[in-house]
Length: 77
Image (cartoon, rainbow, N blue to C red):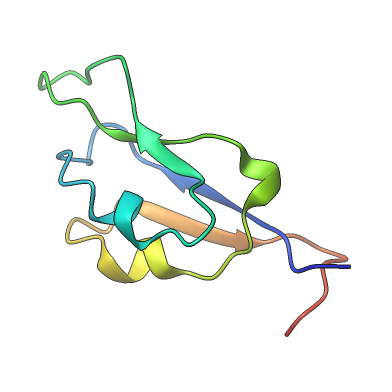
């Protein structure tokens, strides 16, 4: 069984730099179509079943608005 995870992105903290989109090896993150309260289009998680909890998105986020969780029962590498 492959390693599985999930991410949570704080829409209000995200300023839309999209570094996380480029950092995601399995392309789980995309630009949101709805703006947040500041008018910025934040990043959002999509296709979460592909997430491998690598933490790349967390590492590159300058605003620390992404949390990464490894799901229970998932294989550790």
